[in-house]
Length: 299
Image (cartoon, rainbow, N blue to C red; front, side):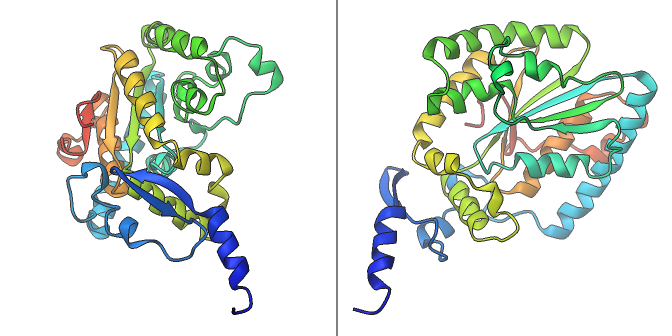
């Protein structure tokens, strides 16, 4: 036996996860530098993604810059009118939430455009009304606020991982539409995006993170646990959309296997929804119904 072979075998047995993918049981060792072919070959098309190629980089950059110029106009309008904008970004791990927020806010003035990404609640926050720690970060006049995960943790991560009781989960789904009605009645321009990534694409992105010295910090033990609970997260997502997709606070579902197309669609939707000064609809264009849709229609 070659030196080190025994250690490698032991590592494989320990680290290789047994997961179901499209009805087939697979083994996936995320620490193996080589990405399995069954992931590489299926990543982009996973979960029925409608395009077989990503949007070309030059085309993406051209579209994105024009949309970013529109976002600067939007921010000037917000300052002039005091309009408050709040956007929730939800989705599985590695769905592209942070990158989409980054593309959206890249040229916006950080004094009045900010991202909220809360850590786990403190002991004091655990004793508060569930929504309370999020309300503290709501926008004031003229502010643009993006939540990288939100109170919808209680609709996905918490029930799947056992961090809340079934009764707390049920109560959240029952109470949230009324809570969000108050947000809208207050005059806040309110958006909710569910970024939907295919299973093989999620595995590819996890693998890329683990083997990158720049993004390895993004991968956590919670991600490992989530890999094996794909179906449970799917059930939680579907129930969340069913119970909290309302006329006053609808969900926009966005397919994100190609992050470029997803970012264009998210930004475009926000810009089409706000009648700000100088809005150029020719630049913003029409939505791609293959990538973005109202509620669970795309799923």
